[in-house]
Amino acid sequence: MIFATNGAKLYISDSAQNTEPADATTYGALTWTEIKEVESLGSFGDTAEEITFTSISDARTRKVKGARNAGTLEVVMGQDYSDAGQAALIAAEKEIHDYAFKVVFNDAPDGGTPSERYFIAKVGSASEALDTANSVMKLNVSLLVDSKITRVDAAAGV
Image 1: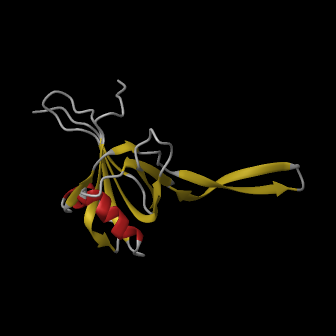
Image 2: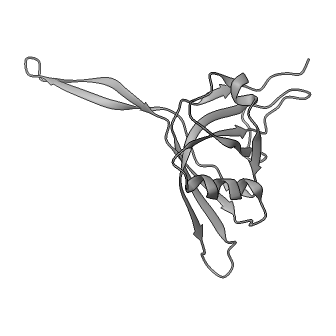
Image 3: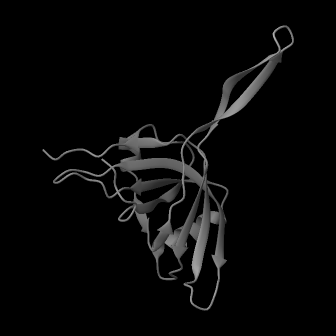
């Protein structure tokens, strides 16, 4: 079954994280602040670096998987000066520390719980975008994912 992106929510942890939480339960125990007015979440997920070796004897290039990179989320928001989540992002950009992030999807079955994704990231940038006269002022943030993505699938209610 497929689901629309609408209704998804993004959260930032209330404190810097020195290490990646061990599992979804540990992530879930953190204190979270929702980041409001999100227009686009971008994409994230592991990609392996390609390592190549070309053998002289059979003139064949061999490929193996190298280090994994979970990507950079390019998050776009309608700028809201009163939003605590956006303020936390701007403050986190000024620091060198990682923060935990949570994405909650709008895919819960009736009476069940939605899918969630957890990860650690540095806020690499926080810039304002002022486009045309008929545009909303935007806050564009790059989240440099620095961990694996911990997946929690939607679950049926009891």
